[in-house]
Image 1 (cartoon, helix red, strand yellow):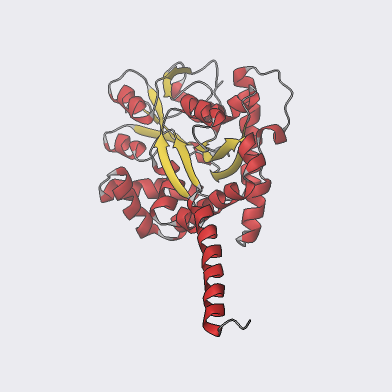
Image 2: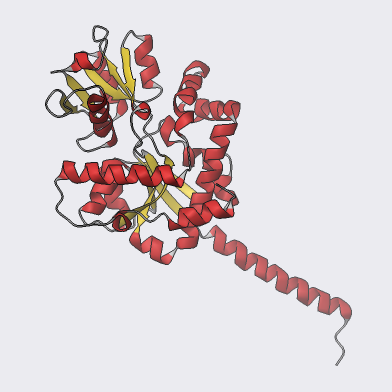
Length: 325
């Protein structure tokens, strides 16, 4: 039996259409949830990746939600969210305590935080015996304050008192109301504090490499969905490249995302852009420091290697595919 040419063409077209639809449905099914501890300049990698379409380019439909660090860690290990962006003491502390999660990428390998003090305090040394507001004990803000204190010759544990106040706006309020002598703040609140007469004594990225944001996921996800993880990481790399090379576009994004005026958005961009980096060597160096510091803070006796807490193999693959050095 001879099949008419048109019918053959239609069958081929139908088969190709079916392949396309199946392929599209697979990517359409890649719906993920990403948790963030706060909306601020140092957390913009994935919100920007979503806004500028980089996640969509990688076949990812993401819901980005804001929840506390502790709740995010629990949601991640329980499967309620797929990824978290906070690295710091909370994610690594969880891994050290046996929570089955790992760091798979860094996007901001140094903290953008500043140590900001009352108008009458002019130097880090003058903080001796004073109280500093941080997010939580063992978190990035706490680590940053201790590192700055040590860098300027203070005993980070004996010479300063730390008060766990909560998120940046709460720390800013505590400083403004005179409840603390200093606070660890990031953009744009450090900019706002300076406008009100407070002093920026030091910036954390000048004295330490310490990953603040990146990508954390469950061990199960690493085992079951490595290709999905790679595509999420690729979207993050695209976003970081955009942030570094497109000043005007990123400032406009900050205006819309954080509801800032142009002056504050510009100050925020200028305050964070230099720490957006995908260098895996900086990432690994910083992670090792975070792991060591977290062990001291939580007084962990667990014998865990770097590979028990972080897996950067997928990040390496993504970087090689995208031509990163």
